Length: 436
Ligand code: GDP
Ligand code: GDP
Image 1: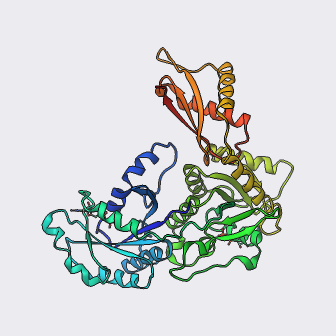
Image 2: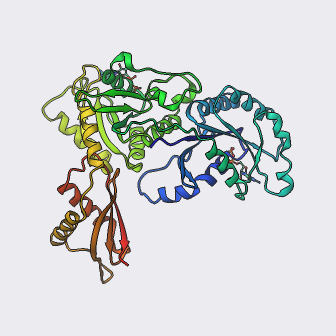
Image 3: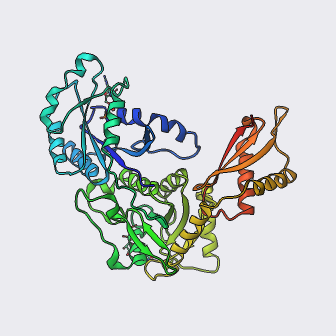
């Protein structure tokens, strides 16, 4: 499912991050349940009346010593390129400023819908004090108070109404995957080799639709693939594109739009901190993951080099121990054909369904293997397990008391599932429920 992207732009202090948090509040609470990975607060999924979308606070993507002028220009540029709907936020408190006007001018260039929201309209007088903003030429201003939460519903209605109708162009039997990783690990080289140099059409024009930057290709066996966000991989040069926040944001957008994520590492430099951030997002998003170690032509190798690198990967990305690892060279082309093959395999794994009867046989065997935990004199009883969804495979386990189902027992069940079925490359979710 391709989600529409909504970007908030505006000069500093109008309340962009407050509005952002207000809109995603609900979702963040769920996300933060997961241990281990820090969240980027400038990018999140949100939902309004059943419409899901990705929300970007472009103001969060700043760099040190940046001039304000450059910053707002970059914000507008990011919004024009990345978003399907743009929200220009201004503040009723300081009335209109030059900067508001300059941003509005930058946004005139886009064909995408721009919605004008006037923040800090905390009381009725302020809510009627917004008519100055008509002169920005962006239509009717919508008064909101991000602090109090008023007007947010009206704004969200407008946003949802403006979503493009033909976003999800993915064909039924097409597998979408993304190639992510920090700069210079060889992402563009891999994509070029995979699809053939000439077929990577990078479209840098403003206002082009998102699907124009995906690259479809057909594998050796006739399977259809779509590489998500190829343009994001290739595009380079602007100041903000070098900032880590921006590249993380891009990676997150690509991850959200993929079935399977290929995390590219560089064999010649080893694993860096930024690799771990990107990996964390992929894991959190519940997508299939393949670790691709590129530039395997570079290191001096002996008989254990591969094994040693695998061990380092397992140490550094403990939570990704389910991810297959492929060693490739985009330069020589070595084993690149394994990427689409493995993508297809992981896709199959993440979409497989296990019958409840089979699962309950597994539970029975598991209970013979390891007794259920006894916590403060109370023993966990596991009655029944059923798969409720795929991609990622998600299992509801009915128990006497969900509090007794500690992480270690959940992990044990996940390992049992992995031992008995091929779930390579996909995370598995376990949801304990009290049996009624
Ligand atoms: P940003 O720089 O555009 O991201 O702005 P922030 O979200 O950091 O907000 C700037 C300041 O405006 C903070 O002190 C907020 O508490 C305040 N603020 C944000 N939204 C509102 C609002 O709806 N009403 C009022 N009165 N203050 C707000
Ligand atoms: P990206 O920033 O991740 O898209 O990385 P690029 O594809 O632009 O590659 C960065 C640099 O690494 C370029 O100079 C490539 O020629 C080089 N490179 C990419 N893949 C390989 C590889 O497999 N082996 C070697 N030796 N160099 C590579």
